[in-house]
Length: 283
Image 1 (cartoon, rainbow, N blue to C red):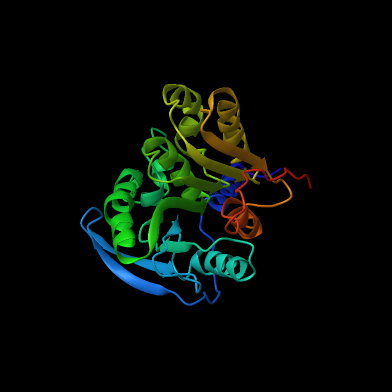
Image 2: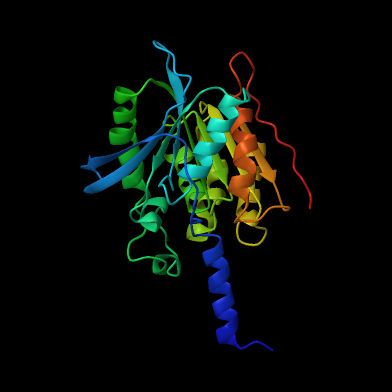
């Protein structure tokens, strides 16, 4: 029978598996990389920007923002996914803006009352400042320097998914489309999901699109189901939403598996109507 020490180590490894960003070694399509001096964050932030090759003068394009957006993070595979879909005529042209991490666990987490949560990094609970950086510094910079429309979306997985769901509630007008894959809603004892029903009933004017998919059944799934129940009971009429269970995938594969499907679905070629319907699948 395993010792308590071994069991504790296994549990710690399981939590880490549903928390860490996956390192990426892939060459992205042509893109721009700039460094912004952030007064909000009091540090420099590297930003990677993909522009479609089909840009037309006098036209503005939707922008998809992504945490974990460094060249050694998720930017290459998401940029390649979007570039291929646009070139093949399966997706409307969009701009992709990747935000490279400095202190990931600080930026992706909100406040917590759980002592164990606060042990995962020297600093946690910085999501409000990171969100302020995006809203007041990054978005204005992108829209002033690129042919960007006000149709803003955001995509991310794991801790970034947690940040996206929290942003949906804390600053609902910032993004028109929110895509959260295997979001770490266990943070702060699942409070974000547990409070969702009350928030939705208090904000009937909320509109936009919310897509959530989950694969990890023990740590991620239970709280996503709570969020789904809240949406079933109290989602505003102008909010398009979907929660998809993908037990055939894993925490490490869900991003690469679903991004090529979800992004063209939500940003279809010009003239086609976007859909927010992706079937659940069993193993």
